[in-house]
Length: 157
Image (tube, rainbow, N blue to C red; front, side, top):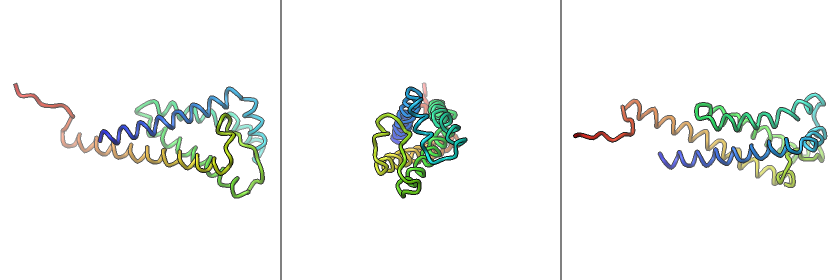
């Protein structure tokens, strides 16, 4: 049980670091982020929406992951974001849009589209593993509660 909790915390820490980094880069280099987003093959209204929505949703995901009672919602949000980003990268790799710039920012923007795909898939797996572990830990905790086990030693004096 302790191993599952440690592994889950490691997965969550990796997701928090990723999303803090990506949101920070987008906000610190907002003009670059905006220009790169406007170069995406999307409708102009969607480009303008995503300029703000992507870093905002990344920040919201970090906040949700940091609050224990909202962690599962945060895990589902990070998974949804990562799957969306990965789906987009798959389409780019299939040359669906032709050649387009990356709007990620920071070190990640220097990745090739194939490297993006591997990177994103890695984090999708991390996110799914964290959700699985969350359910396993929750199931184990409920089982202990149903058995009346509080985790404390009973001392007979």
